[in-house]
Every structure is written in structure tokens, then in C-alpha cells.
Length: 302
Ligand code: CP
Ligand code: NVA
Image (tube, rainbow, N blue to C red; front, side, top):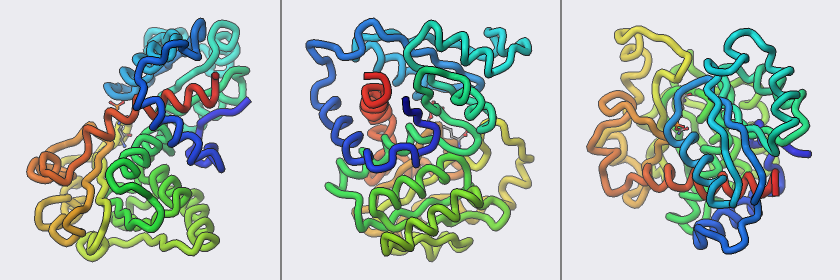
């Protein structure tokens, strides 16, 4: 049995998953749905629009059923352990999608579950998001290998998964972030090793203006992630130089893609002009969550 806890879990199946997602996108409603009679439990400790709706609709498209479980409404919210929760849910359902505050809780759930576990975001990674992102890049650029992808902003969960995913797919990757908001050190080491072995560029810089020169893709995310807390003044002092605005994107290639996992905070990490501009593909990314996750569910539960 496999899980999707880290984007690294995809391993050599990246092409297979992206190909399956493309196929599922071209034929939204399959005549003989492959996950008929299967159920997916979806535990949410944090808010969600895209992850919740795309998993639920995706499961319906594939003939199965998804259950929304708000952690506060579960006994989990009253002190039942995550390991007991995993053991109980495994007796009812065929897969568990978990949006967790902590990566340790994610691992504990996976360790105690006898059905596949899918990470729907935790404080370390957001693998489902970056699969949809690769699909989006492939659709718009025709390929991923050899592109220059620049992530600007907070070295957070999305950044961690994205740097690994892009390197796995053969793209060069730059993180431009404040010195105190670096991506995870362990995953950074893995990214460095992967880049070395594949002959790709991987760099962390604090100079966003230089990093975005000739970029094929500029990606940003919220300056303050769910569960993080930061004062307004401190936020601007830390991230002000990392706002993706018209001036910044003018340094990228004219046909660059602007990407954001959403939800966006217009006027903070990105200006409306950029996110609503012709280079922006943010709503394609949101749509592709559905198709990429259907591929993931087939891969793990089919
Ligand atoms: N991008 C993303 O995961 O969005 P939600 O928080 O709305 O699920
Ligand atoms: N980094 C953001 C992503 C939201 C989808 C967060 O964790 O809140």
C-alpha cells in the first residue's frame, strides 16, 4: 500500500500521474467509473475551498463517495488520538485525505492507517497542489524540463513541495525568500542533491528582482500561512521586497506564467494587475486540482 504524504512519494510515477490526469481531464465523466462503491474520508483541521471541493467532486466523478469530516466535529477534536482515528476510519473507508496542522500528525495517521493516506496540506508540504501545478505548466508550455521556475515569497509548505516537484520534472528552480523564511532544511538538502545528480540549477537567494530575470514561471503564495501568526508591520518589513507586481514580472520572459496556489491576498504577495493579467494561470491551477487528484485517487485506490 502507498500513500501520498510527500511529493517525493510519487517517485518514478510522475509522468504516469500527469498522463493519467490529462486523460481524466479530456474525459471528465467515465462511462464505467473505476472507484464505484469506494469511500474517501476527508479530515480537515484547517479551512479549504479548492481541496475540499475538488476531492469531493473528483470522488463523485470516479463513482465513489467522499465524506467531509471537520476535525472540530470529530472526537479527534475532543482528544481522541490520531492513531485511534486512523485505525477506526480504516475499517470503514478505502482512503483518507488529511489536511493537518502538523506533519508529525500526518505521519502518525499514515503509520496507523491500513488504507492509503493523501496529504491535503500540512505545515511541511502540499503535494496535491504541486501535481496540479506541473499539469498546468505542461499544458501551457508543452513541457516542464529545462524551464526556469522562480518561487518568490515565504519558504512554506507549497514552496517545499514545488521545488522538489519541479526538479523531479527536470526544471531549474530558484527560491527567492527572506533570510528568516527559508524552505525546510531537510527538503532543501534533497533538492540540492537532486539538482546535482540531474545537472539542474537549484538556488536560494534573497534578491527576488534578479531571480526573476528571464523566468518562464513566477510562483508566489501567501506571506502568512494558515496556523502562522505575524503582525501587519512585521509582515511588510519581512516580505515587502517580495511582492509580485508589474515591475517584477516585466523582468521575466514575455510569455512567462504567473502562478499562485490560491487563496491570494491581493495587494500583499501579488497585485491585482498581475493576478488578473494575461500571463496568470491561477484558475487553471485551481481547476487542475480536480484532474490531478482524480489521477492520485486512481493511483492509490484504484
Ligand atoms: N490551494 C489550496 O489548497 O486551496 P484551499 O485551501 O482552498 O484548499
Ligand atoms: N501556504 C498556504 C497554502 C494554502 C493553500 C497555507 O498553508 O496556508
